[in-house]
Length: 125
Image (cartoon, rainbow, N blue to C red; front, side, top):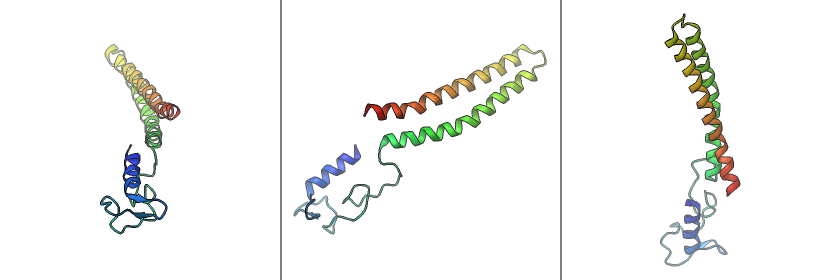
């Protein structure tokens, strides 16, 4: 959306053939010339992210979440197993360990589903 907005502004005020700004175009760069690099060719706006589209950003975030979730799920399953082993006949402590393992698995399923959403968005666009 941002890309298309900036593209429309540049198209309205700059001549792509000569790469100069049209007279009276106050939204163009003050030099009157297209800068050589940027997020949008000729805009001078630098991209602070290394992703060109929202889908690419969502894919990177989902990969990062997956990398973080695997060790956390492993630790939580081990913690739940430890709770079950140290219950020593206490049914409340044993069920607490079972719940910990169940919630860890539910969290992993949520992360797995979330990692598929960017691919779904990419296919729909």
